Image (cartoon, rainbow, N blue to C red; front, side, top):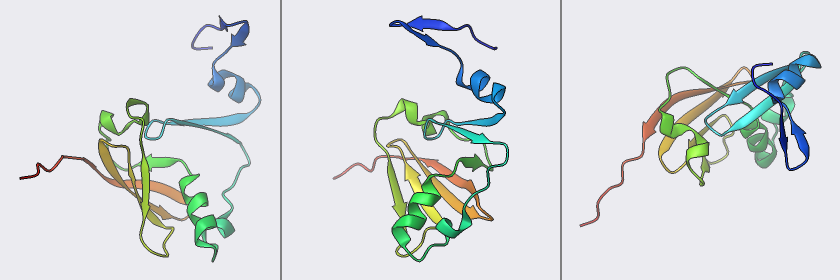
Length: 129
């Protein structure tokens, strides 16, 4: 185990990665949204939900996938630094979206059941006259 177990308000806290991997699960921490993904080794994405004619269901499936980066993201992209976030989808599309956390906009594309961040930019406030 990489870190020690701690007693926190009478509860024993151990590293999620240690426990998950001890039970044969894969662990992936996505810093962008501050989400820990724990999946069984035989987990596969339900592609029928991603391609559902129900756009709301498809979008929920899309944002439920872990984001993989094709570039080095800015530290400001990590959600634990910000309290607000927004998902922006184009009309009738669940295969692309923009994730904004108040500091960084990240463009996400879904292809072959994988979610990839293809572009990220620090949000620069535009001064009003």
